[in-house]
Image (cartoon, rainbow, N blue to C red; front, top):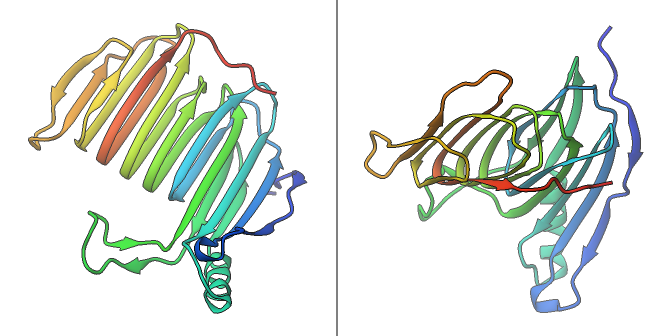
Length: 236
């Protein structure tokens, strides 16, 4: 029998409207607190926008998502924006020792062509996820920034366009494989730099060490930053 996901807390989605009629936005926020297996893997798929994953001292996972429309001016625009946000679905599912967080959203053809992506969205999406520090991470992100703070498990991140930024605490050896097709790679940890076959690409690698934390970081358009924190941040 497939294990069931235990939801131990669920925030109430709320509709927030700005005070200024000319720059009013529709916003929906939701918080879930979920059971998480010891030493498990958090898999985030098809995310877009701003994704932040923080290590903490609790055994479970807390996921807060905020969906925001572009600026709307009239009641008709607000109604359309609300319907559009309703089509953005963020689901969680437990698969053995993995917790999957998957996003489904409508895309619109970019015209005129302004980004390296085939499609664009007409909403903003923000994720703030807290996980046990020893969790493993697998992230497949579309457009936007991915921030990972104080997570000690293996980390695999693939981003189409945006930024990958890691802040890691402790002296645990790191095995690093970081590549940007169009952008730079900067690391506080030692390693070997090289230029990608594409003239503007950049790669950074450090050989595998026993009992090391494996970092597999790939981005198409954008930078990768790996920072060394001298002390872990205590989070409750």
